[in-house]
Length: 202
Image (cartoon, rainbow, N blue to C red; front, side, top):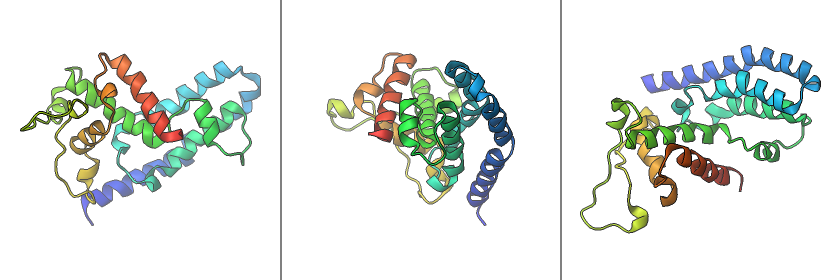
């Protein structure tokens, strides 16, 4: 079996343990005290013990198939239900949208794109900056095609399709020009979240 296959299996196993283990007990405890907490305090608990853990190193999840992310999405869905007291069988997507929470897949892409922006603006380690190379055309590009990156050729069926060196330029080139051209990291994060939110829920 290829090492990439073992990596995917290992990731799926860790996701399963994360969902079934420690986070489950955290959910039980938060659910017990939810009725005694104002929403703002409950939101802080959820962020401290759940969403912050989902977002830790989640750039590594970008490009993985939906199947690999399903249980993590269930973790996020459950957090939203507890926070908003949404019944178990009610549709959760409108709730996530009302909370302005990106789905797990979009959160992973957000992290990759933020790292890409920082790499392009000297705000990231050199080893990341060296992986994002500007596309230099042989002819003048249209304005909307400026600021593109070189996307390396890879076999998408392999782990190369999930590597930062591929995902970063691939995702970056799909952004609208006004997002790529943001003049600060804070502005970029705001524009990027709006863009990904629209793509996730509209």
